[in-house]
Length: 252
Image (cartoon, rainbow, N blue to C red):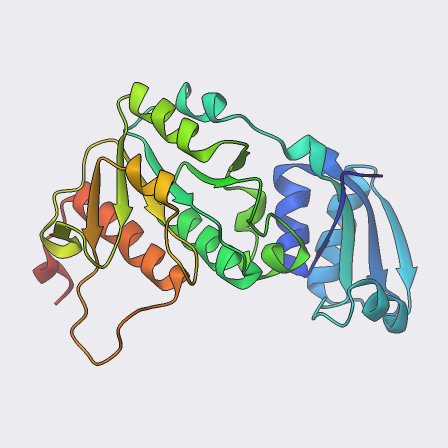
């Protein structure tokens, strides 16, 4: 099946079982494994009438290509996870909070971004279909279940999508080391879409030109740059902090 995708590990499988069980086609569980987490998976799979295969660890290792599967993996119908941007924007009951990833190619970075996006209450993550890693088993594993709950929307034309966001009244803010403002003095707009470039070259020219404003993340040490997932986590956390209007002294 063209839309079939592998997921593995308890976080990813459990998230799928609870959030979108109809997309889970079948499960493979290590034979002889009978701890509490396995029993929970099996009980939920039985409740949802999902076929379960008990296989030896060698077969699981081969299916996951040596990844740390924790004794459980499954195949999903990815077409049943598709969601449109309009579906998200038209059903919001609070100001929009979006993350746009322009050409992220490392699955570990995408998984980490999704995990933080879930933690910070981001409504959707948007990425171009081309020159991006897309959702795969590694992304799901690193995201620890977030890939199953945070809407991940792929678009054919990112520049056009950014222009459409503006029509919804969403301020498009790019991150760039030469930005006009820096993150810790920047008043994050009420409705915001943060745009992050890829791991090496940053945002593409057209993406940059679609931004309403560019903001830098100030550096106080000796390093000149940070991993994209770390940078994304910083802007998401600062946005949530401002939304909650929590003074930093509250944590001291």
